[in-house]
Length: 182
Image (spheres, rainbow, N blue to C red):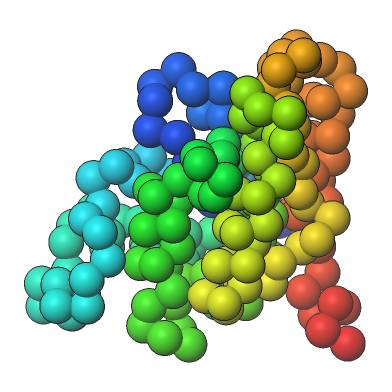
């Protein structure tokens, strides 16, 4: 059986370190794990209940919900902007939280990793993303958080950082929702 992890990248830059981290995790996914980078987050309009209805939902928002809804797990790979998560990630979580109580992330294990060129490594963005995903109904897996400063270390070449990132993917993939709820 294959476990699919939908990845939401918090940076829209084509060559961002976080997009490259997501690509490494996809390309080096463990056996039995498919890492699906959900592209197009920049095309999803800001959440507005007026346009979130079954007859007129924007196609980009519908695609986001379908991709995450089809996945077994969700991983945010994100930098930190001004001490919090980027607006594009917050918006994606807003769309995924609806309809209330039945959104695409409800009951799915969720983790957050990433790097940012500050001494704090994105810890506030990661905490905010985890909190927001939890409110949206995801099961936040605390052991799947890697906040890495990219000031002194290149997260794409540092063996220790790469191992932490790969361990996060394995932990998320292996997380037992039923066992955790017991």
